[in-house]
Image (cartoon, rainbow, N blue to C red; front, side, top):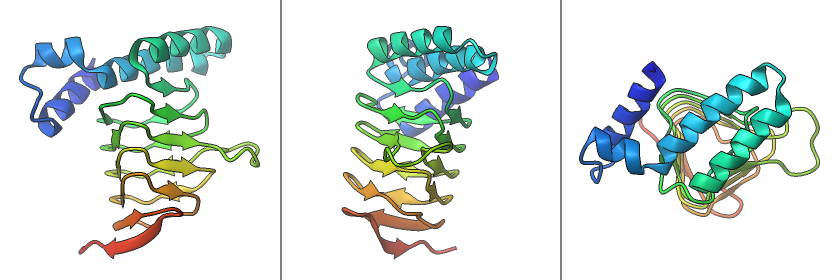
Length: 172
């Protein structure tokens, strides 16, 4: 229940269009996707893999957001305009991450075991960012729209482009 309250408050804090808690609960697919993920993840951890995938698939159908039940999702994730988001099975998403529509945290098809990225805390993934492979995006990083990230991004930077390159170091 605490995660639900945290997520609702995060949405209200970050989205000026969120006018009330009721509006967030009834109309925000990012919130719905996280709640459905939590249920699917519960069963996945108990090795009910097929059932967890069915729940996940239902969530994808309802929200347009696909979060594999095996992924690890931190607290206060904010999914804004979430249509088309894909988060793979071995992906790890830290706390206070903001993800916009069309983002993929996916594999390359060449890796085994840990195949998906690790996203640090307080990371911004702009619209249509593709983060591919078992790489790490450091804390407080910002990835610009439509970037393709195929190598590690250190903390406290902004990266853009295809492939993503660092264009700014944040002041500490």
